[in-house]
Picture 1: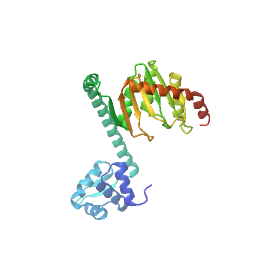
Picture 2: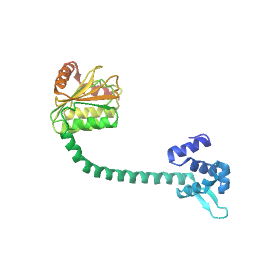
Picture 3: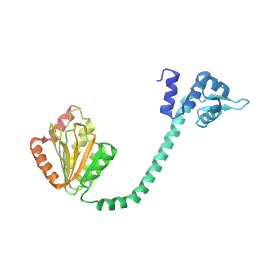
Picture 4: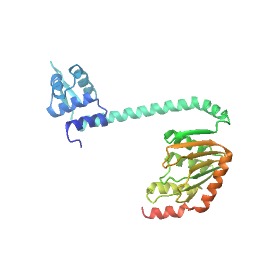
Length: 276
């Protein structure tokens, strides 16, 4: 709970979406009771020319009531009512904005998927190497590559944290379509129960996962043609995409060596779940 007025004002700005002037005027009235615009100006320090606009905005947001007169007076609505109503209004607006955004996305996907697919199919075989940062775009690109697997995906990772949810969803997608997925990775005892259960579900779907305390190169190979490398140190911030079957075969050979060293993950998952 904020301890003083400055903290209250900052919280109203950061958490409730008020402008700094609105927050200052609102707090002044809460602390001093009903005030005229001149009184608000004196108690809050907001510029005099802005006072009426700020007060009218707070009335519109349901935080203040106006008493007509010359000059008018403004008093606060009980915060238990006013602030909750403001949050309800913000929530409704966010829901409307999200729905509007999804409508726009559906329209854009319909319009842009055709050009994207055409350009992707026509991409020159000389475009062998791409570099991406590890951000949401990279996760989306990686998930798309997994979903596009025709026969086989292999992954060797030194990352000890659980995979991104979007990546897990992509793996489930190919497993349900009877594609092959094999993974070598360390599995931590500090994983949450949900993370352990999700990995267990992937194994039930056919994901062949082996545990290995591995600190080497992190990579994935798609259909023995395309490779993605996560550059150390881990967690990596840079990924390199290489469309080169010769390199894919070299990494597949390395993967098979690691595979022989790993142990099936199923028993380890059960062991960790017992302790949760």
